[in-house]
Length: 92
Image (cartoon, rainbow, N blue to C red; front, side):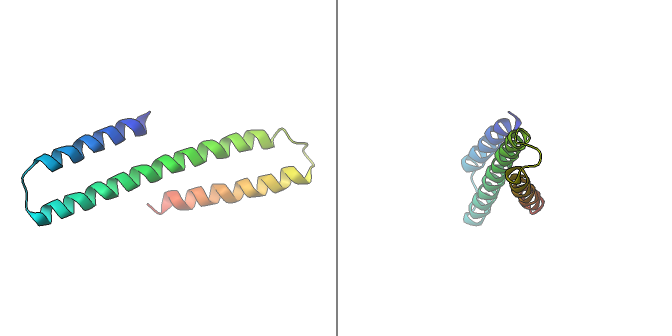
């Protein structure tokens, strides 16, 4: 998985930062950078999982009778979830 590879590369980069001598200010900045990178990767992983779950739900919703109230309600919820995923993805 590409995200796993990126996460491993980031962790390796973060470990290299820790081994280089630097000032306290540089260490603080490096820590902030590492934390932001890890948070971004975790957010991307969560968004990826949300997309997978929404896709699976969409497939299951299609199995319901076409004119059912349940199908329409689930479709509306899925549409709302899709908009939330897009908003979260765009806020990065």
